[in-house]
Length: 487
Image (tube, rainbow, N blue to C red; front, side, top):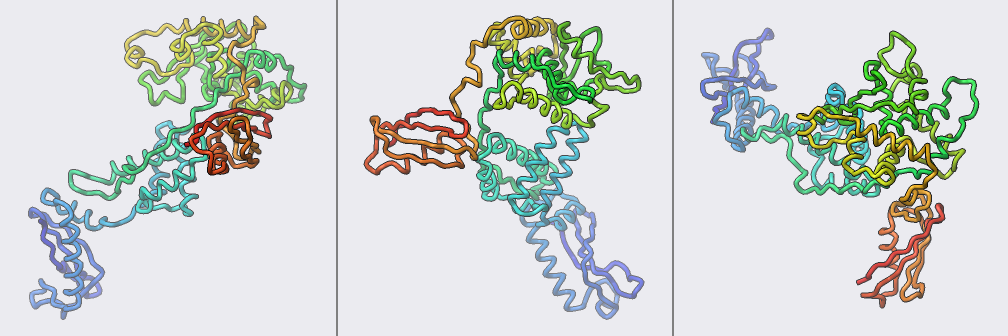
């Protein structure tokens, strides 16, 4: 083990001698300066040893504390500087908030700007829960994190997404600050006792064929502006739908070199940093779509962008927001109760391709540019034309036929497994046709919560019985029946 001794090195300009703790390890020396100083009377005649009784007492306590800390780890292979850094950093708390913000900036620098937003929102929610914007690692115990995760239980996706983001930051911090080989554990891992809940299965967002036809048949209102929002929303939805569900961010960030001989080449921005092929795909622009597609091509010869959207909008987020406002305005003409955004057109392409055009799920995944067999994408020179053929079939089904979707459309669905906590709900419990209890309230997120509440209202004699539940979402005028065995 290293040896520690209080010493002085040289006289300062004020005539005093600063006191140091000298660390000796394998003939190497490092020095920790203390807050004490001595004069000539506090040193031996040869000026080598400290004889001031108070300084001797205080440095002895300090050295004793240092030895106690060193005894917690095997320091035999450490250098003197490593020992010094260990002692100086021992027990020093680190700011989780500051570390996470730096982590987010590094993500942005790697081109993961969209993903970094999830981390930013997760940190903001965690800080609000903690009541501080400078959260320390030491406060993030398993008990604290479990309480935070419980506060997210009413959400659909955030209850999984946010804890996963926070856990990834922890992993990065532990990798940076901990050294298990040297026994240095500055950041303890609280995640061993934490179970992150799964996100709710997303609701199917496909739009029925008849509603798609009504949407694209709307004539946007006249406007004094060039390409007003209603026209923009409808046109971008058409571009997305008629190009295998192309994402808005890939449309907005397209550059001129990506459109060659009627074929649009792109790397899917969502997955290009996580896939070996960088999410590369090629989509032929159908003749049916070309007038709309080319209407928005940039006429600025100095602009690198394929479309003119950058001349009005600065980010893909503002582009998506404007497009969705325009789409909403179209839906208000079709059906005010319909609220589907641009992303639903991607879901609709996939659903129609599989249900109406006979495509396999693998073919749908290929057309959507989802990650498939990774090794095949590395070795095979991919032919993208099967996706183009499938895309033409989808266009033909929607725009050149009046067939309805075989799958029940969303507007005809009477299920509502997911309920907004703001919806007014009326529910009743029956046994053998007799109503035993009822409630009407808000604050429920799903039907299980409603049934659990009704079970507590049942008479005590109702046990080991099948109970039927009728639940009505009053705000949406939807009713669904359920059955449960009450033990």
